[in-house]
Image (cartoon, rainbow, N blue to C red; front, top):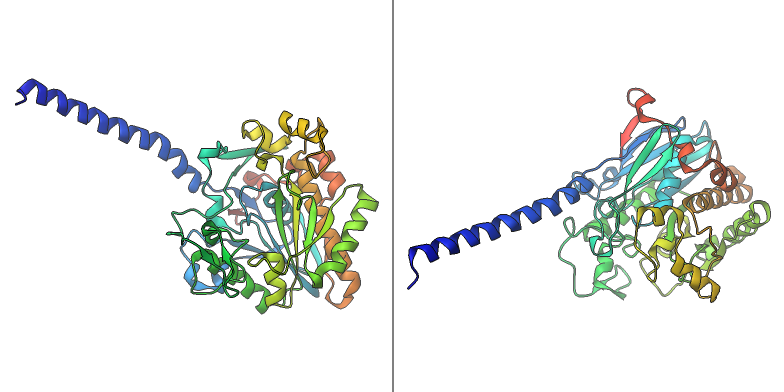
Length: 393
């Protein structure tokens, strides 16, 4: 039988253990909570005529972490419509930066540009601490550092749970990985009463169908060791424009972005389902993203931005990568510039093919300008923007 001192020591030990556990939860949890609720201010550029929400097209999304901003830029002259989407995978940041540059700088002369800069909003508010992801990254601008959340590939389990043992794609019934139920590039075309990420993709499909959107461009990044990188992925209906855009940027701007066909047997992807379930012609752009490769050094903010890694350099010398790679790495400026130039060239080629549905945009920098000036040159100071010009994102 324990004496009073023994019981007292045991009680003190349990109390200390509980206090330590609570302390560790607080220390680890507060940064994640802060990251989940962090907002990046976006300045409405001269071309933005309205800012809506994805939930306008499916009201049940309202109030959830899946709801997200939709920026509309309308030209004075009627024409076609394009939907630009970024952060489908929120650990591929070049697409987000390119989309925000469009929002803050573009002026639409003909047609309409719709931009969803954070397509998987839930994924942008979670992270991969087990892989050592930084919670944020900072882009230098003329007025200081602009901070962005570093997100994850899949939506947070805080917003969609539980995962099934196997994800059964709707409507094709193809069996996919369980985690693909939280991946908004596996849940197209979606359904209004499905899991939350299916509701997100369904809402985007509703925009395209109701607004008669001509073109959809989905901005991504992929590993240098993955063959489908540095490319335009397009189905049959988009192939001609994709090839013309690829050839043109190589001839006039000096960078490669080859064309990959969208596989008809792999379901749930934007570049397949959008075209199959609407009149919209889809394109998915992949810019090289060394940060996502596995055999690399630490996943630091610096590596995310400059793309420099000694392990990848050694693999490049052994011809194990699918993109050119040297001591200069693959910096963010190249990735963002590539997305902008290819997107603008797709619009130009489409407008030549269908002049009555043309989409003419000015004010957006191209590849060479972004490399010369830096990404941050094209972001405006929120403190100088004026009342009603700043949207938290």
